[in-house]
Length: 362
Image (cartoon, rainbow, N blue to C red):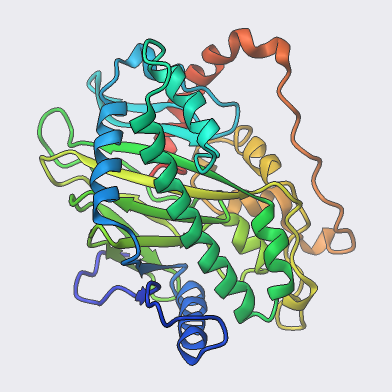
């Protein structure tokens, strides 16, 4: 596998105002989305509906947040994998940091996060409003992609339930070169454990996306109105392997800081493969599973397995010996309120493993 910078990225315009459900434009775009997801595992959405001012504002908000002292940022704790503060260092110097705002499309969750980061300014309204507006815009884009994909498989009757059961995580991320000034290529390729991930960033290049069918790495060319829409492990299971989760990575060549945003969708409902996705050419490959259960399972596997989609197959895949049974894996254990006192220690102890794998932090 090697980089290939000569081929064109699969770019799909999702912002044409004439693109209404049922129109020829909608249908052709819908089919393009499905073809790209099945062929590559991702595509680039051209989304001109995204205001340029919001792009500028959310970058400023991200810099403000990531410039906070480490002792403040470690307060961003979450028992779910990849949801809280994590950092990666080289020679005791940070080369990557990320913080997560769960349910950032809910203004109250943004305020709760803000009060944790800026306790002396209990209502950081500017930060909250910017991040919330950005998350809502991302949710609209994700839901548009979901509607098109479900409809392309004639599964639109499942769409509304899926959207109602979606939970969104926004991660604000920072990357830099190694302390000695050399390019940083230590971020290994990985798949996300989300249903859909949407990656967006500033002007600094570095994101690489692997095409599933071509076995080629594409460099993402950033733009304020371009979003990398990538398949996570959960949609791979839902689609019965028609869509494979996308391997991606970051290679930091620039001396400038790279700021990026990861928007990840997860399901509160049980994820199960629709019966329409199963036929003689596509035998059922996955048991129904809880999305949070997959995240909990992630914490239990060996480090070298965490980056790969085989982890999800190990969690809920159906093997020849288990094809008779499709009982779902058990739901994830709920965090105990009595464990809150040592949660920071647990977060810190697992952060080095989580970062070394770079699972959901592009």
